[in-house]
Image 1 (tube, one colour):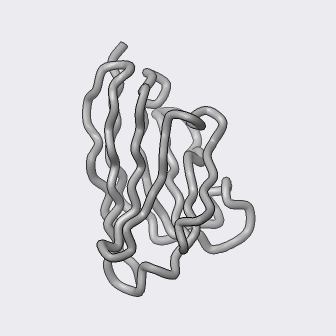
Image 2 (cartoon, helix red, strand yellow; image 1 turned 60 degrees about the vertical axis):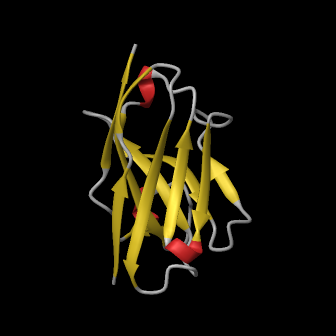
Length: 123
């Protein structure tokens, strides 16, 4: 069993930055590939970014490419999502989860979801 705890969300003006953290506890973190997803009110949960167990492979949704950066610190069992140049359309609850295999952009291929952290972007 793995427990994930997201933090770092908040209210920011458009063009601003936030750094989200996802702290893992429980089983060994270093071997896990991790993903970030987000869900806005009335919308489906959508893929944001992914980082493999080594940190050597990352992927991003087209909507955040060039603005968001995913990273991990295995010594701290934490995955980060640096979000720059935020837009109002980035507002959502952001979740991290452990990748299980299959299509990396599908939330059905992840488990051990955290409770999420709210990101609000004012225009």
